[in-house]
Length: 173
Image (cartoon, rainbow, N blue to C red):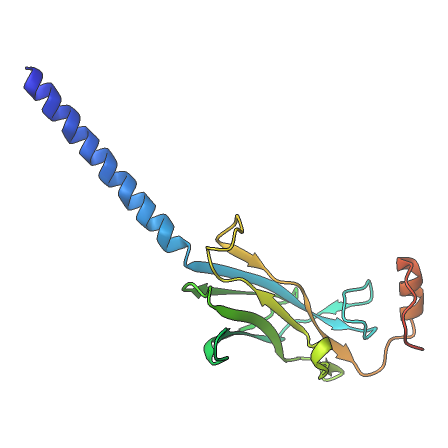
C-alpha cells in the first residue's frame, strides 16, 4: 500500500512539474513579442511638442527601424498607419537588445502639415527598447512618445497657448 502511495505521489509531482515547465516556456516566448503603441499629431505651433492647438492625424505613416549597434546595418523595418484618433499599433517579435530601434515619421495625410525637421539635433524620432532584458516591468506593451509633423507657418493662436503654459518661445509670430 505504501509503495502505491509513493508511486502516486511521484506521478502527481511529475505531472505538476511538467505543467509548470510548459507555462515557463510560454512566458519566455511572450518576452520576444512586443506591442508598440504611439500617436502622430500636427504641430500647429512648430515647437515639437503637443499643445492644446495640436491635432492628431488619421492616416499618417510611421516606420520602425532597428539598426545594429556595431555596424549600423538595418536589421528590421516595419510600418504602421494611424487610425481616426491618430494612434497606431504594431507587433514586433524577436529580441533586439543589440540593436538601436526607433520610430520615425514617413508620410503625412495632410499636405498643409507635412514638414519634418531635417536638423540632426531636432530629428523627430522616438527610440524604443525591444528586449525583455532591460528592466522594464511590462514585457508586452511599449508606449512611444508622440511624433509630430509641422505646419509651414505657426498658428496665430500659439502665443496665447504658450502664455497659458508659462513659456516664452524663442520664435517670433
